[in-house]
Image 1: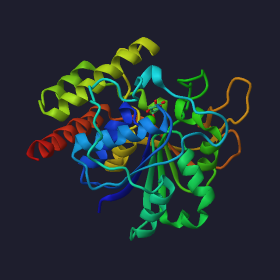
Image 2: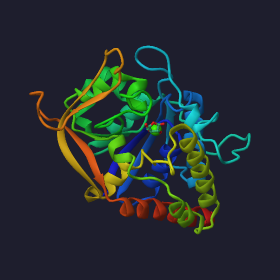
Image 3: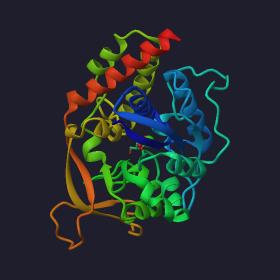
Length: 318
Ligand code: BDR
Ligand code: CA
């Protein structure tokens, strides 16, 4: 049976590929997409989610906007990585996407979806955890409707936004703490795992060879992403962080997991937003999070290329 999923995201180049993967693969039933401020403002991430749905021919999945700022403090953007639109690279044009914005807010859409679905649903957040934390606080009665949370964020080692903190967690550390201490099963794919999957020129060439409008758009996205990752981090090729989440749901054997206690640093002079992952079990805190470790990199890219191929064929037919 396909895994029923709600994506909560901030597209974002890697979020965009996660939407494509979830839309394309029969092992996933994509029920809804909700957006949050993160890589760009809420307005832009929401527009981008709809644009990606358009490109993927995904017109039967509701898209709703969530929180425009973290639980505390001001939003932090990643314009240096994802550009002014949040999804720079392709020429998106000025027109409105065909896929409409759902009139409900993200919390209402998630709530309605959880209540309507016959079995518990997996939440897949790939941006700051503001929407998910707000949902858990506002609707504790819904937790039995949530199967598990599979998120991109944090790291077992260093950060990418400060020396200690990864972007998604640093944007809203209090929200991350609420999610990680919720008692729900959480699987976390952090930078230690996501930095293994880099969109090298041979991967980009495989996507380009598909030669569809969607594959050309994907190449434009990856080309922009490669340029900013080279400029900001000196990486040879950009890591496609977020799709590790859906790849794990499609094929759990792709990424090894270890169970460990994970705490979010909420104070710290230099370490706010760090995920402290107790791999050696020295803190005495019971291990409660499944943490992604080693990735089958070729297997991951096979899934991504196949997703672009499948959706490219579908959109060519319409
Ligand atoms: C995370 O931050 C965002 O820029 C990416 O979309 C990803 O979710 C990586 O740190
Ligand atoms: Ca993201």
